[in-house]
Length: 345
Ligand code: PHE
Image (cartoon, rainbow, N blue to C red; front, side):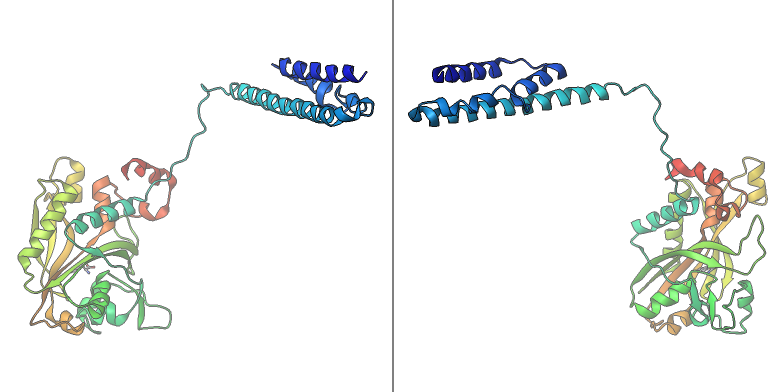
């Protein structure tokens, strides 16, 4: 009997090793026979009492080994079969089905043009300076050589904060000039992009809020020739290598001399006649040499330093580049309008 039990156990080990499991049914019959609660190995443990004492230990160890062998084979084969069935399931995916559309966002056309302007001036060594939209009267006007009762204040109708004559929504990014000049020593070479506000009637051509980029360069020996060359470089980067510019004398309280810059837009079709009023030339910015009064107001020695400044509207450039004929489109956030700029960033 005892020898029988040992032989039986050895046979089982062989059987376990040779058992072929290739599908779920075979796995289940293996489980029932060798691992389940009524498995075939169990009864052999009750044979231990019939084994001669000197063999008990060896037999017991063999049965444990048998049990472990069965369990580990079961676990390994079970995992293999599970893997097979899950990869079979992924084969069911229909790769010819159209994908769910991904809705791509787009940059706002103002951001696109703004970033382009920044990129161009950064190549010339200008760095971006940003400041507040709610300004005080001094930084927006007085420091910029436009004291109270100066007629030039009428050029820029102003939104004042409720019950205040001191605090206002900045009317131009030139306010950043006075902010930077009072807090930094020359050389100064900045561009200041940002939103500005004017109390104007909203129409296709003007809005009460819009965006400007200001430029300021102050150092020893900065001349009008430097200004002209910088603006020519900008215009040709922005509008193409052959772009021509012209400077027309103008007036701003904070620059002397002052000018406005036009780019030659051409007269190729009817729209060109309309936007350039039949001249082919289009005004895109105001500029000039920083007035010595402005330098002194901001604590910069006007005997030692000179500088130039310019300011341009971003909407106007975006309208030109993308042939948009109504400024209000930028602020309506109509998704059909904005989606057209998807490919441009
Ligand atoms: N601040 C002026 C405007 O808003 C533009 C400007 C800036 C002109 C700097 C000259 C120098 O119209």
